[in-house]
Length: 234
Image (cartoon, rainbow, N blue to C red; front, side, top):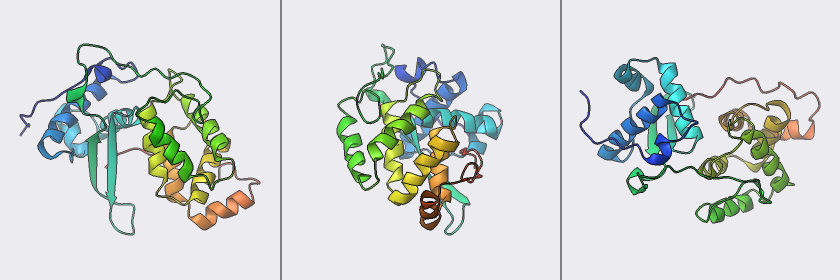
């Protein structure tokens, strides 16, 4: 049975040229489900049946929304395994508060900031705080800048939304700094062209001892991390 809650697609989503039409429609469906419990609990199979598309198509739409900073996803895994028990999707910003009569697109410019993007007043203190969290990593500012420069090359617009930078750096906090350092360097050196989800995958699949060993002995590490693209399929 289809839910009767209102779906909201704000201007910044409607006019985002990086999003395909299906992703925009899915965003509206997610807002409707979030209106019920504050988060969306539906899996890819549910949406695939609703829109009569494949699970892979839904995964692509979800990834687009997450990558551009419109939603956040939280995976709950069965203890000790990689089996997903639940997935929770939340809207990053309250769409009701958006100005619906004006196209909104974050304008990011090259700057002298550590991430080489213009950071607005809402994200500046948050990102600066995260930079201090990783201060134990040698030359982290330079590594972080080079990393986001590489990630921008995966975008058609060559820009990365501030919310994406914050969301990903915040996710790094759960990993040991040694693992974070290794993952960023591994991505920069051997996985240019991959998006930021791939870096999280490296962190998730690399134990601290292994990361330390590879940092101490970086010779012939190209291709050492053999993991698949990190989709949000159930």
